[in-house]
Image 1 (spheres, one colour):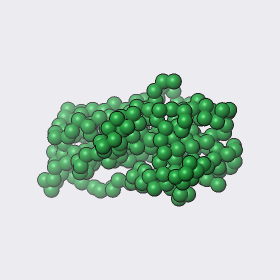
Image 2 (cartoon, helix red, strand yellow; image 1 turned 135 degrees about the vertical axis):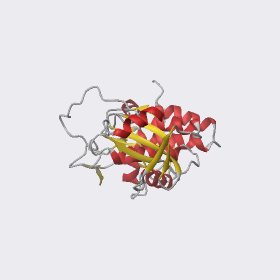
Image 3 (cartoon, helix red, strand yellow; image 1 turned 30 degrees about the vertical axis):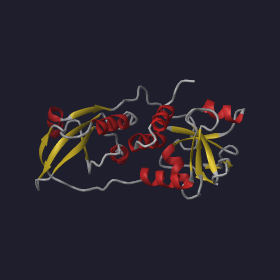
Length: 262
């Protein structure tokens, strides 16, 4: 089977167990990817009941990053809910449950106990602060490590269709304070919170004490957009090839209405 994103991130973490940066990168990927949560039975009325196991370290649920891996573990077709890692962590944190990832079926087999799940849910659930500042100057970004730039690029690569592009620039506000700003151009309606959280997570999981990074949103025809294009480091967000409404609603398909455990 082709190596998955989690396989690669797990291998890097195991190869450098003392490297906090690669360890955080694994947890970031765990929160980002779609996972297949093994259920006791089919979902009913948006309520799901995961199968719970106890390998001796506390109760856990089983998740897999490929449907084929779930089937291989069970040995037959089995009910599941396809949810992002962040949604699963949020569902489990109040239940005192851990996560077993790809157990017995992949090199990325990994156990995360209930305390680790709680930490992951809290970290991924952090909401950026909303403030208002007046920007006096824009400049090319300077002094930022390549690791952070790579983290931003990787994170925005998962934000398909949420905005047209983003520019990273240096700023000076009206009070003379220097900072950096990630400016999104043409954000989709209602996508601002998700994009701000993505930028915040890129900073958090880069493992760099880089301080704060401002996030802002502008229309494509806003006067500042042209200035941003002249001095900013551009990140192009992937765009959907075809937008087609689903014919049926599966558990977890609406991120604003996650399924409930029962």
